[in-house]
Amino acid sequence: MKRRTFAKLLGLGTGPFGLWQTAGGTQKTESVAGAGPTIPPPLPPTRFPINVLEYEALARGSLPRPNFDYLSTGSEDEVTLRDNLEAFGRIRLLPPVLHGIGHCDLSTTVLGEPVSIPVMLAPVVTQGLFHPEGELASARAAASHGTVFGVSTGSTYTVEDIAAAGKGPLWFQLYFRRDREVTRGLLQRVEQAGFKTVVLTVDRDGRKEQDMRNRFTLPQRMLYRVMQQIGHDLPEKMSNEELYKFANSARDPGLTWEIFDWLRSVTRLPLLAKGIVSPSDARKAVSAGLDGIIVSNHGGRALDGMPATIDALEEIVRTVDGRLKVFMDGGFRRGRDVLKALALGARAVLIGRPYAWGLATAGEAGVHRVLEIFREEVQNALVTCACARISDVHKDLLLRG
Ligand SMILES: Cc1cc2nc3c(=O)[nH]c(=O)nc-3n(C[C@H](O)[C@H](O)[C@H](O)COP(=O)(O)O)c2cc1C
View (tube, rainbow, N blue to C red):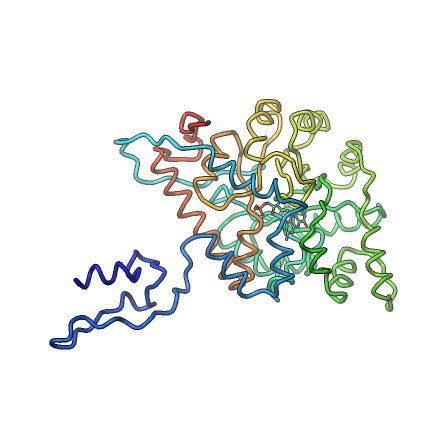
């Protein structure tokens, strides 16, 4: 058998980051005189996964099972979780040929803030579950890519520590506290720490059955720390039961659209609502004077049965008609998915699980590489589709069912 065919069978040398390549380059097959080519020994996997789903597999191997499930599963039957991904597959691309474009400038602005790529990091709670450096690692990786990190209210580190770790643009995701003074104090700290935007999450948690099966709860010490850094005044000693009861009742479930008037009286930062899937709510967001919305179903973790976000996007964009900025998250695993969302009117998109898988696998380097993969894939998709800049992306590139 020829050496080339052999190497092909073994999957060797499949490009700069071929999965079975050594760090020093492709391995040579030695031939012993008269014995034909020897089979090369198995090579360790490269330290550079070539796509985001490889990070999912690596995270599965490096996290305790309940933590991985908490991160990766969705609510109830996971219809929405699956649909978020499958809906991208229902949209095909029609790249023109012979267009002479060889490079795309991926930079854009979000709410006046320059970013080098239209892919941002969505808020993901208690990242200490996935890596000891948690949000600090994510903040550094986002900053080194010149993009936004959305910091969850439920972070394992304080907003001040996160802001000091990464000098990139930060958005603060708010889970509104029943105690308004705690919310006010938190938003003041956020503003002082230099955050650029406040994102109020308006959807509600779904029933995550795999977490119930695993009897998953946050470790008590981590939960105590999270509650404290939000600004809740906790007694020094609390039983497990007291702490969980407190945490469950700390969020305000009774909010209405008027809450944005109150938020405006507390912060000067731009305001977004995250968790919009219907045009009628998008219209209300316009009436509430919001700066933007994030079309989101919480990555299939809220009420199961909501539409895939890419399916909801176009009608929402039409409804708001440029009166506020529209962002979107849910199901982005490939750069070509980003192109599809931009073509349907998203200003930029956010990723959740993909970067948390990177974080779980390799800390800051993992998050950095996930963003790098998106950068490479978005660049490839846009150049192929004759887009020299983000504003060149248009709907005619899409073929829909
Ligand atoms: C483990 C996990 C924790 C999350 N925590 C938050 C959170 O604290 N606040 C929030 O608004 N959204 C949260 N989300 C939702 C994400 O911001 C985002 O909407 C979702 O992950 C996007 O879908 P994707 O994971 O398919 O990219 C979380 C998502 C995951 C996977």
